[in-house]
Figure 1 (cartoon, rainbow, N blue to C red):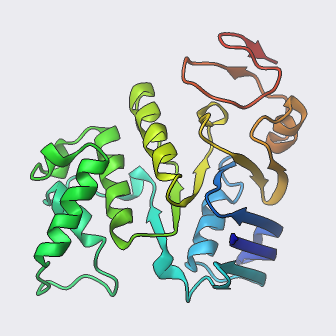
Figure 2 (figure 1 turned 180 degrees about the horizontal axis):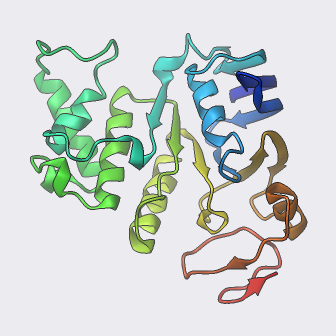
Length: 256
């Protein structure tokens, strides 16, 4: 089954074209990483899938229906930098917010079932002991796991993450990838990254995006594709995190 089908997608911000003729298929239980330079349209593509930006032309279908009608089947984890870490709220309260489908209500009372479900998800991501901790006391990796738990509250068929390891250390990054690898057994995952070396061995397919789709296929890509993606020769350096990018790449060496 195709979870996501994008055909001839064009998106503009005013006169600036952000996405050009994107054709992309994501199948059930796939784990797709979208890679590209800053300003290449990665986050715009996610927002288009989520129905958060208007499209000039083309179509986006989720599980056989329009993306807006199937929005409830998508779990979304935003960029770390877009969330206020200083907001006075606990970890479990953030996760419970994922159960609110029609916006925040100050008078909403969460059911015992919803609270139990939030606790189970925190256990699943390894944060159940931190349920009552203020979010300002979390590390970067803990914060990201909390956001993943929140996205799982609706039991999504598709999980979308925007730069999930951008603000965490190498160990936390690998912990998050291990978690995503486990979740991928249950759902389809689309992840955006700007870091070439952040592509985990759990990733099954790679899409290289720079306004247009430069490459889509096996996560082991050639140096030529990377150079075409960034528009110039790129030097890659390994940092000890298990990854799979360039076929010719060797651990602790570089390709220039």
